[in-house]
Length: 391
Image (cartoon, rainbow, N blue to C red; front, side, top):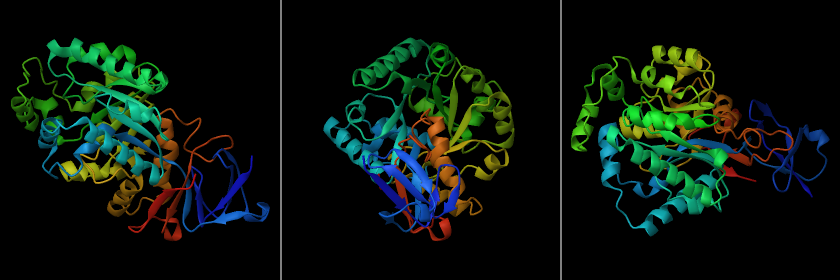
């Protein structure tokens, strides 16, 4: 087996940035070591930019790729959800073509693994022959208590369809969609399956979510009315949503809270005191697309939380590029370094998806993929930066 020797202006190893350094790996991408240039010998391939392990997209809805450009921006979560629900009727061949195109985009821009939300089994054929690693988050939702058993069985059936196509059961879990879309009866059915799994949930994506749990009022009630869903069974606990549902996730091996757009300091302190296995996933471009609002990311840095990145879907985003998510954060919070952003996009992301044994860092024996980020002056990404996969 021959080796490749790769060098750029900067090298990020999954934890820290360094100038120079030669990455030595086998042609199949298995990492051997990192050495100084004077120790690498001949045959060095030189690039301009940053070498990084492959990027991890911790939150995506690949099956919704056919909705790209079809949903109006910045109308709020309720109108976004209503638009998605009313736009699901499309020929299967068009859906599949959109899924294939979207996955190709991720591959080209350096994504190596995806935490993918699955309401259906539409992506199972693609994933069986994919160049990406997937954690398949089978999403169950059902606000009506009388439909809880049916929705639970549908989730189990979907999981089984992925397993039939070769998906590793270790990387499949049944997950609640959001606190406002899962009845207590459905929670009771899915909770026993959380053990040993990464469990994800859409958290505080809209302020109406917190209002609903505080008072039983707000814009979510409009959604229930328009979708003809009865909420008589719900008694508002008088707390913000995160305080209500977090104890239900106690048996999960790792908890992935997604969006966190309206998570405040009280929420954060409560969450961190409750569980040590928390990861907070930001999808900034989707937050702007839907609510025109970004999370208070510096607050999460203040409390040294474990942060990861996602793209959400092409229903709520113009691309599935993790680098573009990094750019948006960098533009809004200039004090956050590229090294910090890459930490979230590589080693943290791999840990959140239980893939740290093979992905996320340039460590001997791993096969994390190698990405080049071009146009990164001084080791910092800019609006002109581009990412592409080398291995």
